[in-house]
Structures are given as structure tokens and as C-alpha cells.
Length: 360
Image 1 (tube, helix red, strand yellow):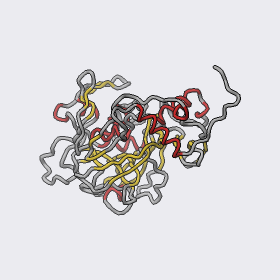
Image 2: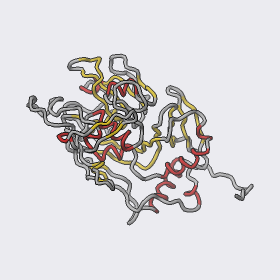
Image 3: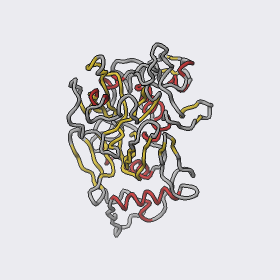
Image 4: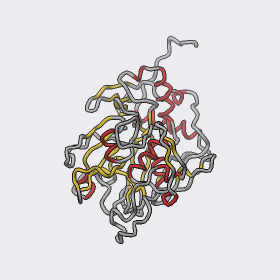
């Protein structure tokens, strides 16, 4: 390949980089330019296939980037020329957060809160290590992913919103996305806002309605009454495991990938433990970034038992730390406030029960 000795990479600001990404994406969208919007749990996907890069700066949106090492946790941050953050890669974790066009998440059925974010959560092919930005695979992966308009972890998670999400089927006819519910009705409980009104114990294969064989050879069959249902930890396994490719196993012990229950994911899950469980609500949660898993104790019965988990979304329009989880009161995945506000800060039910966090 010819190398031009006079060529010097142009240093680009965050605004220029994001403008470039938008221009590249628009070229691949039929009928104009529209970023994903979320309303009532419905996801509008752009059409026209993957974006294609043209000439000029759109072919090199990462020109002029720099890489900075930070600690607590150890991580590599990608900076634009103006110092703004373009991406964060955490040592030992496959979760990567990239800066992209702004999206809004809403769920009017259960909350007036809105989360507006420019964070796009992606999954690396393997855990991050210091210096990986110098590896051969990274340059191409990063440039491509920074421009990627396909559904990220957040977009995939909202494809199961209890507030309404369209069905999606694969070539085999399996409904792999669409409105999810929490579990079968528990006839012993009469209050629909009770945490046991819908029964838990529904995993990703129940939602899918297909048998599943885990790496150790264990085969499980879906339970027909639970088709389309997913409990809190099963929801994370559906999104991060079945959809995003992080390994899964079917025990509550340490193993390769995500175990079954919330307490086991908190203790033995892959990635990095961010906030250790001290048995109390954390006072400092600034370490969190979008996509982190957050875990809660049942403060009504046992304040030490981790029995709920969710996905951190970031700050809502009131400046509060909001999460997304599958819950009985909403009968499925929700960012809403039925039977407790979906918040990590303050003194509400879930905030008081918040105990620990992990970055996958």
C-alpha cells in the first residue's frame, strides 16, 4: 500500500467525530436520517442496512484520538482532540461504552421520567486488557463500532419492554424479541403491586420457548406456561447471553459466564466488581457507567439477601440514577416506578435495597 509522507492525521473534536458518524449513518438510511427513538417501550429501527463510509473524514472518524489510562477501576478512555470522551474500556470487562447520537428512553405507562443519553453500550469480543488499543483487531473494530447504528445493548433490552414491543422472529420461526412478561400469575397473591403477584423462575429459554443445552451438556426444556416470561436475572441472561453472546451456565456457582440467579451473578459473574456488597446502600455510585448491572437485597425480609438485578441506564431528566429491570409489578422489563421507583439514589424502596454493582 502506498504511504503518503505528507499525510498527517487531522485532529477531530468530539462534535466533528459525532457529526461524521451521523453523516455516515445517514448514507445508509433509506428515506432520510433518523436515530433510534424509544417511546412506551417501542423501538424504531433505521432501515437500509449497515452504514457505509465515504471519502474524506467520514472514512476515518477516529483520526486524532488519544488514549488515557485511569484507575478505580483500571480502564482505557478514548479522547477526542477537544478532550471529550469517545469510549471507555474497562480492564477485565467486555462491556464498552461509546459516545454516539443522543437517544431518549421513556415508558409513559409506568413513569414520567425520561432518560436521554449519548451512551451506546457494546460488547467486546473478549475482556479488555491494557494496551489492547495497539492490537491489530482494535483499529478496525473501533472505527466500525463508533459508526455502528445497529441495536446496542440498550436497544436490545428495550425490545422486551413490558410497555409494548413488536415481535421479532428468526429464520426458524423463534420469537426472539417482543413484549416480555415477568411470570405466571400467582393466585395466592391478590395485590397486583405485590412483588409476588407474578411468579419468578422464568429463564431466557422459557421466554424463547425452545430447549437449551449448556456447555456442560445440561439440557433444559422450556415450560409452556412460562412462554414469553422472563424474571430479573433471566432477563439479563436473555440480553447479555442469548442476544449479545456472553457465555451462560445453569448453576449458581462460579463458572464460565453468567450464572442463573441474581445473587450468583453479583458474586461470580464475569467482568469487574465495581461496588462491593457491604450490606448497606452505597453512598458513592459515581463509578457506575451505562450498562452496568446493579443488584438489590430484599429489604422487607432479609436485607442481606441479593434477590433482584437490573441494568443501569444513567441519569434521568430529574438527575436521578435510573435502572431497567424485569419486575412483577410492571409484569416484565421496566424503567418505571410501580411498587418502588427504579432509582439507585435517595430513600425509596429499591435505592434502600441497592447493594452492589458489576461491569460485565
